[in-house]
Amino acid sequence: MSRFFSIIGGGVCGLAMAAELSARGAQVEVIERNGAPGEHACSWWAGGMLAPECEGVSAEPGIVMEGRKAAAWWENHGAAVIQRGTLVVALGRDQSELKTFARRAPTAAMLDRPALESLEPHLAEQFSKALYLAEEAHLDPRATLTELHRRLARTGVVFGDDPKGQIIDCRGLAARDTLSDLRGVKGEMLVVRCPDVALSRPVRLLHPRFPLYIVPRGDGVFMLGATQIESGERGRATLRSVMELMNAAYALHPAFGEAELLEIGVDARPAFPDNQPRIRQIGERIYANGLFRHGFLLAPALARMTADLVLECKTPEIWYEDHRER
Image (tube, rainbow, N blue to C red; front, side, top):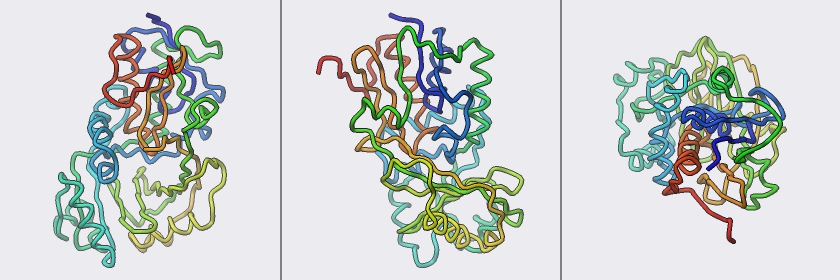
């Protein structure tokens, strides 16, 4: 069994894979033609929410189960994980959405206005109740990717261009040249500065047409996302989507109407038809892909399962497909 691995792709999936294999004593090379993490990586535009219970409202049980392990994995690999939970709110006309969410998220606690005010005073100005998922966490994707890249280089992982040994393909949407059932799901996001609003944890605003999540980045900066459009287009945000995000932020708190727009981002997430990831073995190459909107939540699980497979010959119980003899 090979102990040298070439990982193609230096986004969240590839770097997590390199970290897991390297930590288990393997020699690892990461091949990323664009170099260090940056705007070329889909994960650069992520929200960074480690929110398995929220995702479980619409995702499969395996995503929730594996996602619950993500925060500890990232902390063990040097990320600054902030564990203050997630708040979920809805406007008065959308209270049925909040009730539906509560039924599907059994760990969520319903907060009245005084309880909400103790956590997020600015939200209590707008909402009389909220759901609170206390065990969830978040991180800063850009700082996390940059630090993980540095840690890997310091611990002997090579960043080169000469693949050898066992190849593990983590190219995301670019792997459509082989993975014919992989599709793109476009997401747009905004980064704004609004010093008149203080939030200390991610907030989700439920809405039947354009739900919003907002993640604090510190110093009055917030990330707003994210649209979900069936498209592999990676470089063009639409006026409609940007307006919907802005309108949703204004509905969350009117002070966002005076926010400074710092950045508009867009990319396409790789997804399989059921929106669950895959570890797929085709010939001699292993493909780890399909993280959809769960990049930071599920990259550790894909890395761990792949390492179990290639180092211990342990077949993953979920998300693994062997196509070598088809």
